Amino acid sequence: MEELKNLYLIGFMGAGKSTVAPKLAERLDMGWIDVDDRIESDAGFSIPEIFDYYGEEKFRGLEREAIRNVSKGEARVVAVGGGAPMDDKNWERMKETGLIIYLETGPQEIFNRIGTDKSRPLLAGLDNGEKMEKIRELLRRRHPRYSEADLHVKCNGTDPQKIVEDIADKITERMTGGKD
Ligand code: S3P
Image 1 (cartoon, helix red, strand yellow):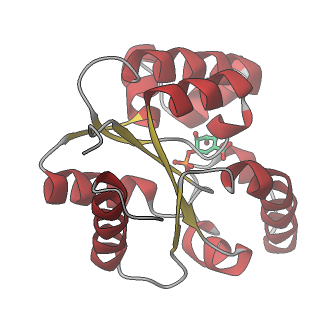
Image 2 (tube, rainbow, N blue to C red):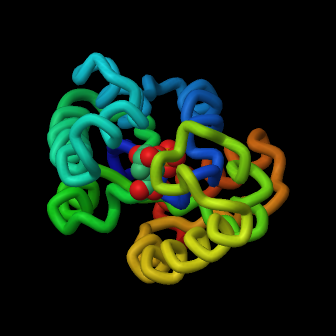
């Protein structure tokens, strides 16, 4: 039987990573952490403030550092910010220290979930049409990397508890030697 490692939840903003992480952790009796929360508590600023005051590049550096830190220690569920997998160092580290799980959502579902949310600096200041265009463009670029994940779970309109059960089944299957 394979040993349980970190379970990295990846996917676009609004895919439900932060909602699913604590539920999955409870289901599997593990700890959990949200990388964005860790960045905010380490920096003492919110994510929009970090983008505003220091810019995206600085944020990506803090994100890399936070992922390096959370990748160590005992296995837990880790909710990872939507842009983090695009960094090769982050990707390699996650591959080496855990199982990567892609919560897959389409652009319209993402827009419905986060279109009015002010906590996403990448969509700040855009009108609805521009937001939709930006979501489509980022998703086009990110989907190939997200698709390299070890496990995929379709999340369009799906109840978070159902997603948790899907993931738990896939992990159990994998750990007992079955196929994804
Ligand atoms: C980002 C996603 C956000 C946060 C930051 C940048 C991105 O996290 O890390 O605003 O590049 O997609 P969520 O995916 O948890 O919203």
